[in-house]
Amino acid sequence: MNKLYAAILLPFFLLCIASETFGQLKLVSDAKKKELADSSARLNNLFQANHQKALALAKAHGWPVTIKTKNGGLALLQGVNSRGYPVYLITYDNIIAAATTQTNTVQPGGSLGLNLSGSVHEIVADKGPSPDATTL
Image 1 (cartoon, one colour):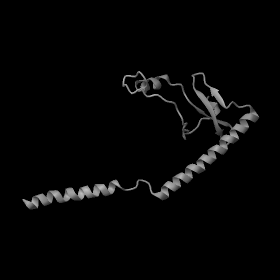
Image 2: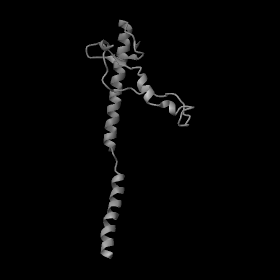
Image 3: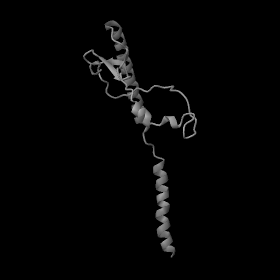
Image 4: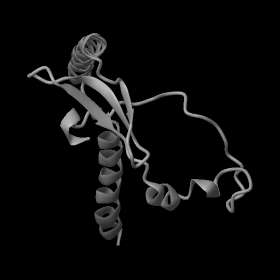
């Protein structure tokens, strides 16, 4: 009977030790974090330089920096492509998506009773491919 307990408890004990060890492993090494931070800084500098170039060209050529689309969205000047044409980031006024997110349930008077309110304090740029002005 003692051998049966030992046969059951020993693997269980080893499994507990192993899971604790694996749970403490770093997901990203310090070297990879530094590489990611360097890459992020380099790409941010590249974007900022391209954006400033686009703003200067917009002033010289009369390009709009912000365009309101007929669907209610916005097109914002992001930069210029390799051929010197303006690149715009387009947002869409998607009322269907807004209705299905159900943010009204967490706002004051909402059905969840959370009474959350606030405003956006940070704008995050999407790093996806940007359309050029011809797609407007």
